[in-house]
Length: 505
Image (tube, rainbow, N blue to C red; front, side, top):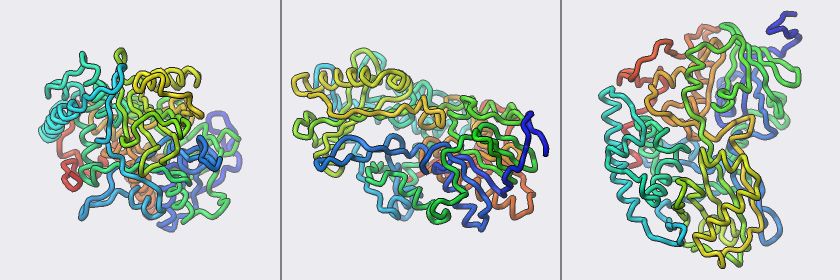
């Protein structure tokens, strides 16, 4: 018997590999290990389901009285495939498991102010022109090793300055905040463009909205079933990790229920929000370069607020998919409604939802449902006329910023932050590795980023095991410079494909 941090170390279960989390990165990592004939592993998951931030629930009522299934978290396959280019792995799996999905047409949008329907769609073209300049400028920053700046700076230099124009502010929210969960001031110009281009210019520009009755996580449960048996003892649901102790030779994981696990290697797939809020302790403390990487990046919150109205009292034009609202006082105040009661989605459902992000998410997630509902209803009645908008028959939204197992929705890259700093977020410490959407250099914030990172880290561990523990691990940087030389955009730093893509363009 030994002791770690004063706790008796009794009969911890020994394993080749352990991983925390049964989300996309965790399940993909376990599948990769299994495919390499490494079956001596455990998956420890906080929740009672496989999926992580792919989370669905039941909502409202169909005509037969049964509920609909809605997605509280990830909802889109973002970027599909443009032959003969590569295919987004999530799209491959969506097709494999026949997930119900429909193309989201972001040009199918009606615009509003507090005075009702007002057509300011011409501003989209003006914004797109500025965005094209920002893209080109980001390419110069990348190739010439220039100092990164905020997306706001890039837009301003391109002539887009919406501060005094609430309608332009709403259009900008649709083009920036809706994608990255942060305003332009808090997003990197260079790496926001990298993430977007690596996804949509490599795969395709389509975003397909998933609304499968089984839940979006059906593909992940399907993949898990290829290597996990029913009630497999290697999947520990409802298990909370308290501490991870690591060395250059092994990792020990301590759980809230008193159990512990010894492993040769471990993969930590906790969200960036969990790592930043210190829900888990590490022994020894993570090195300063690792802590700096964790604390430097942003964890965004993206909140969908669902309403169901009587299907015979629909007040919006169901020929549109989206409805953009420019509030007279506050940018991002219940700005974007999306109908599911339209052709190709759930016609006749009476369901519409509004999305808020970051600061507005914090407000609505901290307040009572009734307050939020009253605010949303005020906006809808401004948009469509008070006499036309009845009371909803159901109302629901998640509180991602308050969930102790995630503390947010997905990560974002802040301005002026180098590739090396992100590599420090990504890199292993001893035999403890990290994986998830936040550790993806080119696809941070995207589901396929989590998939790629889970697979890639597991492949590294397979290599370590096959070399009998001889493993160099991943690169990290104790001394950081202000910019990243173009030669450092390489596989060792997680850079697998060029960000100058044209396949899906």
